[in-house]
Image (tube, rainbow, N blue to C red; front, side, top):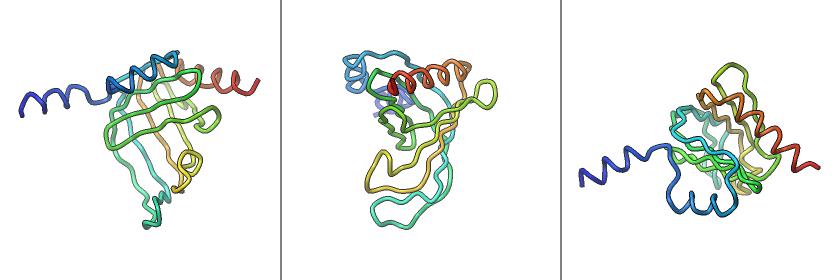
Length: 138
């Protein structure tokens, strides 16, 4: 039991083997793991539940393939978005901010989500996301 807990703790902010294999099959263009951050929900509603607003810490992995942006992290953070759904900015060094409307990813959800990720590669990831979005628009 203790070994299982240690493995779970050590793997926080990384991709599960099955998800990594799927992304590798799609062709990973960028991968960053163990990124600390914060997820903020505003007016977030799931399937008829009362809207919630709040934030939670996360440790996440972010990957870009030609088909999608994938973010998986602690606190039940799972984003698989196609081109143009998630907007990014790097407002300060080492801070990447990603925003999307929940209904754009999940038809049964509403509200907005903001993910702040702290990484030395924030500007690089932001530039890559901008290029990725531009490529899809052409």
